[in-house]
Length: 250
Image 1 (tube, rainbow, N blue to C red):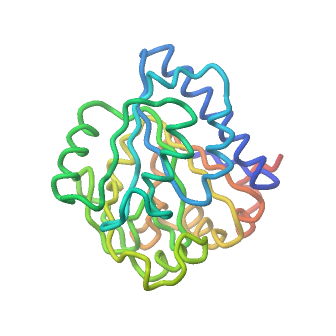
Image 2: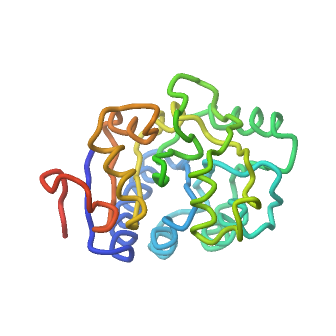
């Protein structure tokens, strides 16, 4: 695992996007197509803004999956991750092949259908974040590190749901759904390369727990320590509690 620390959110997003774009270009040149996993949430704003402005990416040859979606939320709800991805990625790039998790549909059918597609070929590149409670996708602690199922229906804990209120996606905790569809931990780890984009002071404690402590289901993103092709991009705020010897500040 490599860790890079940038001065602020803008430079974090820019640096991670340069890495992501270079990887995508190489994958497309080598294989002729690319399969990606894409995170959502406020922590990904600057990264996706920068990535979608990168030149010379053959987006029409990119196939997209996303990590998670709330159960029961319509695709047009302001907090829907399908809406987020349409507006912040698909409409900006022209990606035509994508697989939405329809949390307002038949959840079991959705997980099976998208799961089959996910398992059909390896994922080349995954973009993920780390939640304030250490979650990876919507795998809240204690996370299931063992299941091979590509997608799960999960119960969201109160810390996770409160984060969504804090970030402005919902007006109150009572509005936040209690269940979601989430990609499983083991499926994320099957990606050939993983970029982790995490900014903000509220993430500092989770970053420390996941990057410097023992691997544990109680800190779900700690499992990323086992993936050799993982690069973590932080800003100074999210890296504030890390051992300075482990980080590179630009």
